[in-house]
Image 1: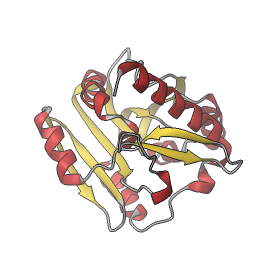
Image 2 (image 1 turned 135 degrees about the vertical axis):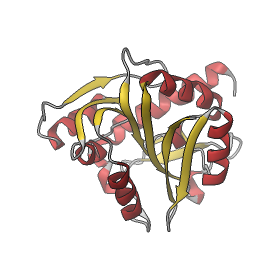
Image 3 (image 1 turned 45 degrees about the horizontal axis):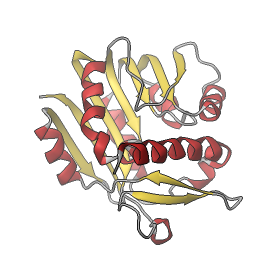
Image 4 (image 1 turned 120 degrees about the vertical axis):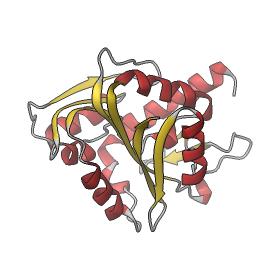
Length: 216
């Protein structure tokens, strides 16, 4: 995809999540395997200083607080950040930052980098640069955990668009383009190994998957 076209798509994706904030939780996927993600995160134990990318309305932030000493939660949507702050009742261990994750770079390093349901919204053209940014965000012994899904409905496909570009529609009928890369665990793990990561990626009983690990 041409650079300008990709920038326009990613800008539209941000607009979508800003507009979707009030109805985000109502549209959550109620499918098998979600409990496996929770169990995997508990076993991973994201302790210490945590960076959460694309925190959304703070659903995962709440879970991270059971382990983390402090959390820096980043999202491109001020509407989502407002919901997250309310959800965690303005816990002083959490600081929020509004930023476009394709332009933002951390100014320090962290023990853990976590992102839930974000990796599939990273276009293939930005995959390597995204993981390069993560490398710079981690302490020498830092770890990564992510959770996501490969779920795409038939009406989300757009004729004539790249297979990783989908349409998402809000309850008011407005629609937006967004990125959705349907990774498979084996393909994703292989790609990360090629980039110098030692991350195991696991499929749940449903469409969800999760990965955990560190630099090789």
